[in-house]
Structures are given as C-alpha cells and as structure tokens.
Amino acid sequence: MGAAALLAVTLLLAASPAAHATTQQEVEEALTCQCGCGLTVHACNHLQCGSGEPMKKEINERLAAGETEQTILEAFRARYGEKVLSSPTFHGFNWLAWITPFAAVLAGALVLALTIRRWGAQATRPAPVVPPPADADGGLRARLARELAEFDAE
Image (cartoon, rainbow, N blue to C red; front, side, top):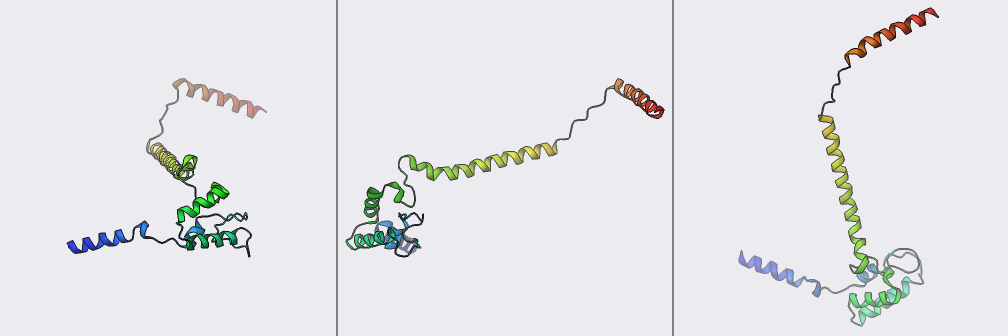
C-alpha cells in the first residue's frame, strides 16, 4: 500500500506544470487573432489571414528559440495590448470579468429560491375569512328589492 502511494506522488510530481512543454496550439489558443474575426489565432478560418498567419509564424519561431508560453504572451501583450489575450488576466480591473458571471448566476439562484419559498408559504397559508358586516346584509337586500321593483316597473 505504501509503495502505491509513493508511486502516485511521484507521478503527480512528474506531471507538474513545470515539466509540461508548451505546444504551438496552446499559445495560439491563448491569443486572439487581430483581423477582427473574434477567434483565437489557432481557430481563425480566414485563408491567408494577414494577422493570424504572421502571428503563427512568430509563435513557431519563438518556441523554436526556447521561449516559454508566458514570455511569448507578454511579448504579444506588449505589442497589441490586453485585447490580444483570449482570456482576461487576474490583474487589476480584469478580475471582474472572471467573477461577474459567477456572481450573476449566484444572485439569480438566490432570487429564484426566495421567490419559490414565498410562493410556497402563500400556498400553504389559508386565505383569511372575513365575515360580512351584520347590517350590510339587510341593507343590500332592501336595495336589491327596490332595484328589482324599479326594473319591473319599466
């Protein structure tokens, strides 16, 4: 049993992100094509794209030179700005782009739960029975008789 645990820990350490070699596709997926298509560099479907093809070539050259994914992304970010990254970073104001969707779903679930709870409470509570006033019954009968008499007279 101890040998199996040692083997599992060794495999986890060997598969750590530091040992992971960056592929061209990973870098291309992390960058947005600047031709206006809104796709990543890897997914850009324009034939001979004036933006995507040179970016792919530069990524290939930088990876061949031994640069890491982070340094390549920083170089493109310095050249094109934050918009070149396909996903926002966790720095500065961008953290809202990560938190807002989860906060909206959580708020919606909370509102839905409170609404369902309120509906359930109203459904189980019987409607209050209000007895009619004692004098209203006699007055209404007299009014009804008078109006029926007037209607018959016409």
